[in-house]
Structures are given as structure tokens and as C-alpha cells.
Image (tube, rainbow, N blue to C red; front, side):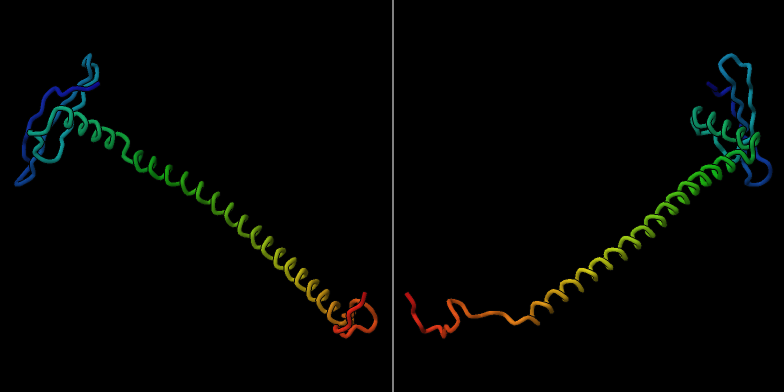
Length: 140
């Protein structure tokens, strides 16, 4: 854990304030001193320590943060590519299934039409109750 050792404000020309901040770890084995942009004299010790650590991180590893972000984006893109491939596969399967269902419906429709046509082409025996029933005869 780092703590603020000291801070000092100064200017590098007209309207270019800087704040020089030094932080140390608990046993004072690590000392980091950085110049920060702006007049940060009113900032809390906690904020100054974090600003110095961030500046140190950026100065020491200038491309690391960007590389980490790009790696995260690449990972997400790989996941998206995988999901898109799965969706394309599912879409093709659905199209095949839909085509099969449409063929089945067409076959069933054709089969029903053929049965209906056969039923209409055969003469029906509408006489009930004997050979010559005119509907007025009563039989016992």
C-alpha cells in the first residue's frame, strides 16, 4: 500500500501548472516521484497516490493498457464469431426443416384432394329402406 510522502506545485511557463508528487510504500523501500499536469494541491492524498500510480503505470508500460483492451475486444469478437457461425448453422437447419414441412404439407394436401376426387367420382347409393323408396311409402 502506498502513501503520500509530499507534494509540491510549480509552473513550467505561463498557464502550465504542474504538481510534483512523491509516494512511498509502507517500509519506504519503493519511492515513486512523478510530475502531474495541473494544480492538484487541493486533491486528497488518496487521489494523488492513485494518479501517481496510474502515471507510473502508463510511463512504464505505455502500450500495455491498450494491448489489454485490444485483447479483451479480440476475445469478445471470437465469441461473437462463434455465435454467428452457430446462428448460420441453425438458420440453414431451419430452412431445411421448413422446406421439408412444406413438402409434407403439399403431399398431404395432394393426397386429400385425390381422396376427395375419388369420393365424388363414385355414384352414391342414396336409396335407403329398399329398392324403390320415394320417401312417402310407409312399410311395416
